[in-house]
Length: 95
Image 1 (cartoon, rainbow, N blue to C red):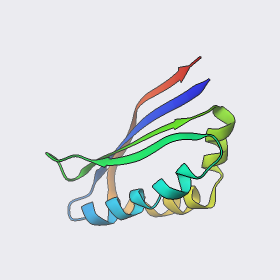
Image 2: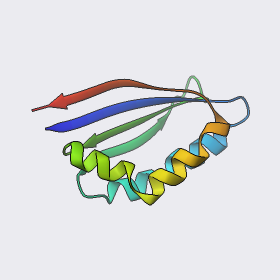
Image 3: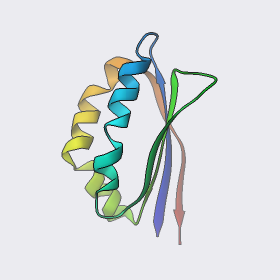
Image 4: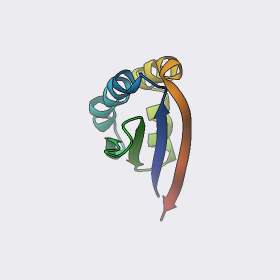
């Protein structure tokens, strides 16, 4: 089963560029992970403080591996000072 997540981030005022930098740094290493089928970061044109991470993983094991990666740990320990709000829009499990 594949897992697709859409996670929205709202940057704090004045932190848009730092938020973009932190989220963008996740793309290349995430795409290189075993089980990553899709991984992109989008910044909204009409609201530059709003970002969306869209990711698809082969299965739960691949997603768990992502969450245990070094780059994920850096992101988790770094994003909060720049982020006003974070939420998962959707979690799909497709058979």
